Length: 220
Image (cartoon, rainbow, N blue to C red):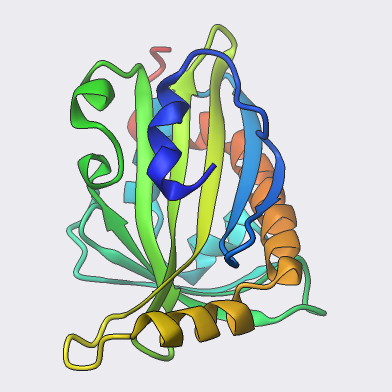
């Protein structure tokens, strides 16, 4: 699946790859992760991203890999339009310490708006990039649908869409291709797959209790 195919997530059932890495000949890669979340609902996941704050809370999500958390342009209790500024290891401290700017977008920018209105769930969508330079390198969709047992998260990390955030210095196609070859490696994708599987597994474990304690909402 490429980013242009993201609306396939609305189809019932599962796609051919729900957990793993898809490598494309032009250097793009898609990382897929599936997390089943018993006793959770999609509304809890949306609440989590609005509640998540600084480093102390961020470390709950992945005690080993998560190092630092801050926010930019954020309204308390919300996340769309804000940027999450993080430092995190990818699958352990033997890997790179990634310093990322994760800019959350309205789902209608990434997915069909009419299909989303009819969807029993929530999609957490973001443009991901570097915190150290004005470069974006991909898009993320955490597609969360309600199920009979709770909900499940089908994450898609679309890597390779290199773009400059500096409007005065856009990338040429050649520059974007060069950066893609340098930065979007299979090893990075492998580590991201492991990290995402682990962190969403942690979230599935503690979110039902945390949500009910914080909100008082016990309705599934």
